[in-house]
Length: 616
Image 1 (spheres, rainbow, N blue to C red):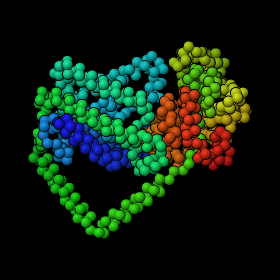
Image 2: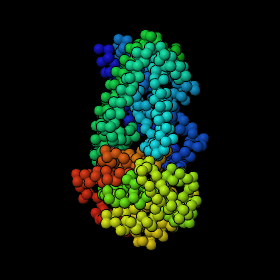
Image 3: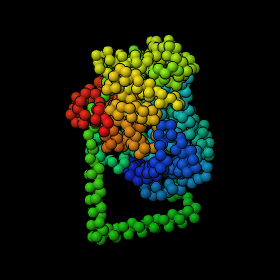
């Protein structure tokens, strides 16, 4: 009975709080944040950190960060108090407990707000175990970072150390929210109390706690193996919610999953906390009174605001009783409905989905001729290759700024000549038994022209500082010499070097890469003279795809490893998959086209739009 009351009261509160978070709190914080970010100018890729490296930016960031920390703690404080009162067998009234939980915010006073905010907004979302709040439910380290790290032994050790550090810290500080919520202890004292509580628990209960946390993580891991798609975040519930719901197949599927897992996690959180509190409420003297122990001044202030809130509600009810207010409300609702309907329009996509093999493919040493050949054999429309300039001005395919990872040498590509580079044996983590050799762009183009598959090249320009113009000119020379422009796509993180190609050949397909952003990709990027946008998959969102679609700009995603996510991105409106496994991506695209058809795209020709359409 007590457990049922705890679960039911937490469910009622979480339903209300998540609604308030999605409709009011999250949009308000995002709007303040995004307004500042947009005022700065370019705030993506290498310019992300510079967005807040000034007094105004730092103050705004810290204010929003601490406000979010307070709200996250408040939500968990209410949950903990609801469960504690139910465990004590007392009557649980959600509205009353929400008011009482304001008392616990005193635990965040002074410098305590700094470590507390880091704990609630960074550590708990990373651990994603038991304490789940609405504002930042989860944080994951982007795979393009982890993927690069595990390519070396040192990087793999680093990844293990990172996971061990935050899961270990989560275990040691597990009771921090309980001591902050029930005793109003500041973070430092709550951390000491948490460690002390673990010491006093005894081995049996300590083992049960550790086993329960491991079981939670294992269950989440198994669920993630079954449902490998990206999960909806608060930012997905924006003003275009109705558009997503009507037009986005991915959003409807993901919304249903979000509802089910949110309900399940809420029930499990309440049940887990009930078990833990049953162990420590009396042992740690954490029993709480039905009323929070406010000071006289705080009690007076709370009473004043409660009376004002009651008068405000009474005034609203009185005005609502009058016909003219009902008419005004109806008119406002009609205008809102009209606005939503107008904003529900979604233009068609420009072209059918295409598959691009990342650095050729995983079936050969990256960026080498065998990797590109494998991409052609496995149905890729394009092979993506990274192009740099040698010391003697030859464009060659190589990704890293240093030769260390693949060739064991500290030099950069630009420090050696083509003859020196082509003799270096290469090995990578995915195909270490194979030996590859650096290929020139000319060699790759000749292969594509001779190959019967008709595969093209997605050429990513990776210039060193000051080399952008020279690299673009060298690539132009090779592509023009082989008349390969119609089968090549060009992209780069360096926008100025793209302008050289676009100005010389406006009919060629040119795009910009984005791997990080200080917020939503701001208006600057939509003003770039590009034909497509290639984004790292951690940036993909319903909002981004919808914005790009409004502008007729295709979105390509890199680097996609999972077939479920590939399908999800296609359902969202992404039209380019860049993957190490082009055979898997080709299979997903083939199935998607078979079930959805290809007649709904503006471009119905072979390859990508070119000539007048691309230039427009």
